[in-house]
Amino acid sequence: MNIFVEKSGITRRQFFKGAGILAATAVFAGVLAKIGIDIYKASDKYIEKRIAGLYTLDEKMTIRKSHENPEIIQIYKEFLSPGEVRPLSEKAHHLLHTKYGNDIPKLITELTAHGGHHAA
Amino acid sequence: MSEIKGKVLKHSEQTRTMHWVHLICFIILGLTGIAFYFDIAGIVNLFGGEAAASDVHHWTGVIFTLAPLVYVLFNFERFAKFIDTITTFTKDDLGWLKTMGGYIPFIKAEHIPPQDKYNAGQKMLGLLVIAGCILMIVTGFPMWLLKHSMPPVLVWLTWKIHFWTAVILILAVLGHFFLAAIHPKSRVEFASMMIDGYVDAEYTSHHNAKWFAELKKAE
Image 1 (cartoon, each protein chain N blue to C red):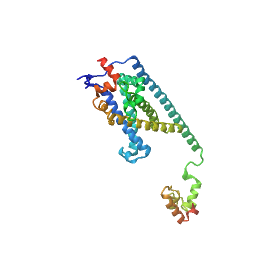
Image 2 (tube, rainbow over the protein chains, first blue to last red):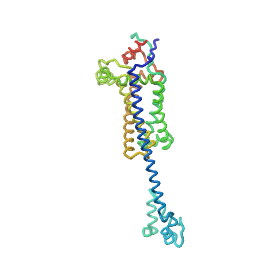
Image 3 (cartoon, each protein chain N blue to C red):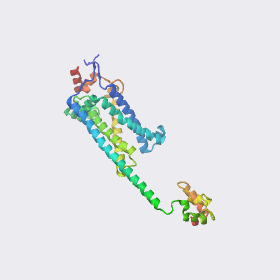
Image 4 (cartoon, helix red, strand yellow):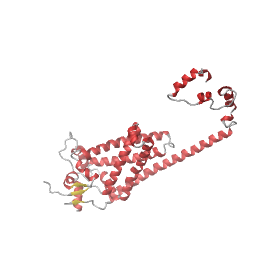
């Protein structure tokens, strides 16, 4: 039985076409990779500046801790836990904890039942 | 009865291996990609949930990129011949395109011009797949690695290019699968890429007459 196998060796034209496609793809990918790396570096630089900005702002604040904020202390003493500063008091838990999605109607009913619309 | 007997080695072992690896990667990438885009929980769960499916998509993409690269580097001669064949269009190729090689029932095809190792349709598919794969790769990696760093417009652009290239590639590959595995006229070539690499010499002398003449000349 005759078996026809691959012809070995390539012509100059085949070499240049193959090498050309490879080179063009490498250049295309290289340029895009360079753009990608630049974008990544620019993004990193921006993030670093943003972090520095936030820390600087924070350092300039007179009150830097929420539990030392006189207004917060006052709201606990006068409303959320009358007479004392007690985080996670029942009222603080109900009013300050986030509710979302399906819990919202229940929260509205609860607040309305406690006359919450006045309190809130 | 034809006097041409024997077999023609159309695709080498390395080419078939690369085709298999790329095919498996393409199916995994296509399935996970479709599952992400259309939010199909059934497919996502098949790959172990959202996070695992995402990892599978990314790392299969790496193999999808490296497989042809390794093949090209170790089989440059085959690659160069392939590129030369699929980028060479002659009057015979135009003649094939006018009749669509006789594969479309309502297009009259009395005379189909002789073809190279790949017919004009396969040449166009080859170019489409190469261009498509390059686009998928150059948009896929930024979508994975730079999505938090890129400006929104670039994120939008890479997503659009990735999605529409995927749509075109999936349709092209489905057409390729139909002609290679289902259509009664062309499925005889199926084994040449998927199993042993050989095609009947008699069939090749008709369907790839120019290439067959070259092989006979070199014999």
